[in-house]
Figure 1 (cartoon, one colour):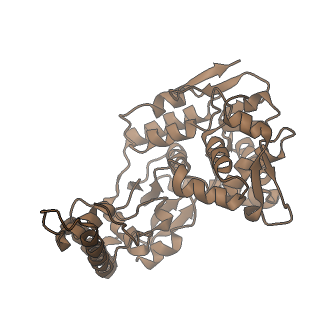
Figure 2 (cartoon, rainbow, N blue to C red; figure 1 turned 30 degrees about the vertical axis):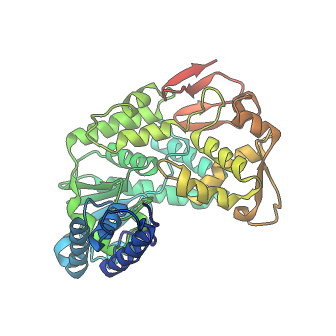
Amino acid sequence: MSARLPYPTHDGRINLEQQRKRAKELLVQLRAAAAPDQPAPLPRLADAQRLIARDLGFASWPKLKAHIDAIEFAARHPQFVADDEANTQHWRCGSDIKHSLHLAGFTGAFYMFTDPLSMGPVRDLPPEPYQAMRTDYISQAYGLERSDVQRRMADEYNQLPLLDGCPRAVIWCEADAYDQLFLIRLLSSLNRMPQRLELIQTDRVPGVQRFIGIGQLAPDVLAWLWPQRHPVTEAMVQLAHQAWAAYCAPSPQAWADLAHRQDLCLPLLAPALLRQLQELPGLNDGLSLTERLSLQIIAEFGEVPFGRVFAELMAKREPLPYLGDMMFHAVLRPLIDSPTPLISEAQPELAWPQRPLELTALGEQVLSGQANWLDQQAPERWVGGVRIKAGQGHWALDKTLHPTWRA
């Protein structure tokens, strides 16, 4: 016996009356699907409510109701949950929650750090050449004015020392590589621990079926997250130093060792590092996981708009979503613009999300494992401190997700 469960929530807010209506609609479907000649009793409203609760991630209807009550309380009493102070620093890897924090009643200062560390070269260099390296990459990959990128990069990196010894700071992040790399970058930059340093991080929110990140959450759900913060310990800072050094190294072996551990004191770090490790080329096809999933989508859909590939990737295929649309565009451009392309792009006069994409014959061969992308004219790319250059020996990932040297 099955029935469709409509109206999934997206931003974390769950309306109890709406869920009661869903349960009544589902009950009608369940009873209609029940075989009239079976002796079993007809489904009850409690049965439908239990299915609705489980669909939203709760063990029972009472637990769903308790969660809704807690969020409504947070919304009615922001002074109770948003007990930050004017000198509190809220740190985030983007501006996506800035307005929502204000609406939820938070009064501290907001700082963002947007360097997309999950893409391009990230090496252990002194501050000036490091920022120049990142500026060059971001301006080229995203087609931005170098002076604008340089100014923003300088502003954000110049803010990092504000963390040192400050009265109170709270870091907001989720489970993906973009956020976890931001977290270890911030923690590894500390010279003196803040007097009070706390972390809010989550990989799921009840009721959100496809949790992408806290930027999608409503202000009152951010208020609900606030009491779940926990202190950042010295052990966490030491781990951040270790992980950052491993990510910047020219060999991914230390990074892979951390990614496969189950006992890290930052519990969301290892899965994020493991997912980021999969941006190294596969041993057989030379593709990163993002490249491989994108080629699979194009192969399945045939001619498909660029933006549709991104939407499909984020909605269904990507195991730990971390890409924005500009980042995704930058990932696929080398596969299009290479002298030996894997993807053909039509109608360049259109905005890039509308341009139709198809696999080339070489793209089909690489996707099927009959050719290796790095034996072609694949452009040079970096994953952290690991350089990948076609036609040269390079690190690759085997089927067990461990790095191996491919000569």
